[in-house]
Image 1 (cartoon, one colour):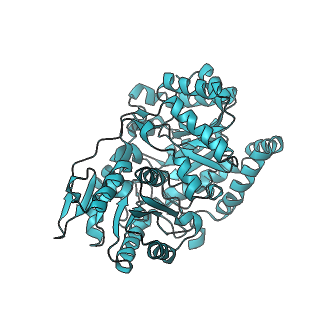
Image 2 (tube, one colour):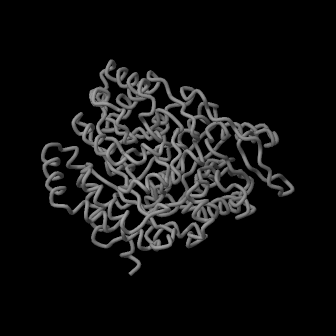
Image 3 (cartoon, one colour):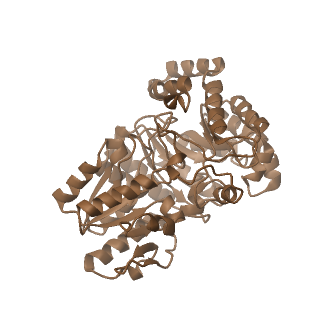
Length: 496
């Protein structure tokens, strides 16, 4: 079949796939990784595939319609997110009204968490894929191609000819990840890698996973709860190293790989095998990855990872207050929750000793937060001295425990998902805690950003780093150019 995969038009550089979708203050724009993987599976099955990332390339809905008509596209797979879902449904409505006969499938975390509610938004929504959808899209296309009923396609919610909504049997998670194509092959075929940028990574970069799932149960974390689950599945070390080799050979302009696993280092033996395989092959591509502040990751392993190419870890420190860490169930263990800040200090120092930088992720507005605990978090971020830091107001997404609790307590200020963004498309919060308003949470993040990035000691560190490395200089200039205006204006500057 002729099928189009779209990251649909919305705000310019809207980062739909990141854990908290928004237009970011650092200019960060995520790859449509999951969409691209599903497109890769469809190509492998012999379908005639196109992929458009509209927020990255500036495509409009008219561009999408033009491509559908020009290439006689028969099916469209449309990505979604919570803050953009009203827009995303309108995109599907436009496609089905202007291109009668085209079948659509909406995918992503939001529709996985709220399938019935999404189907009820419009009769134009014909089908949704629930959770990981690589093989769900494959089977949906196969059914359409031969005119079969959708009743046997695992993992979809769909509307029959009478308009009745039917939810099919759940699809098991993919066990053998080595079966999947390299997502970097799809990027090369359809995307411009220079469009994508992570504030903490060298530019340009490529993003892929070495595993799926996360065994931890953080109450706010959206991917494991709505999409990839809590059971770990790994690609083999050889398979991952093969993708590094492919990128080095076929995308020589790429300067960093970002491993977007929920948590890169879970199985220490598996991680060491991968590091040793990259070393054996002489890997020259630096890589960044998501990681936990886990003191069991010792100096020896960190140095081995550094030799393999590890450049930076993106670490969810979340809060400087042990009570907040305990409430979010950060470690599946109350004693570890109590000592988490000490572990974070130890882990950060060990990384820096091994020559690996740290990007710190901090959150305010967790459901037992106080003004005092937020101030502790800001002070903690400055104390840790990561290379870069991000500060988010809590974003409670449907399907998470945090969303369910906030909704039950009446703390969600708006049921309009568009309010998850400010007027400029920046991160907003809709959580009103008993003693802190949602606007105050956003303003605390503005304050934290100023205190962290305008600290004289930090500015000196960045100046010296930029003098030592041209690549780091370019990264600092690119990120700083976008960040400075937000430091000056704040999140609500455009609205005043």
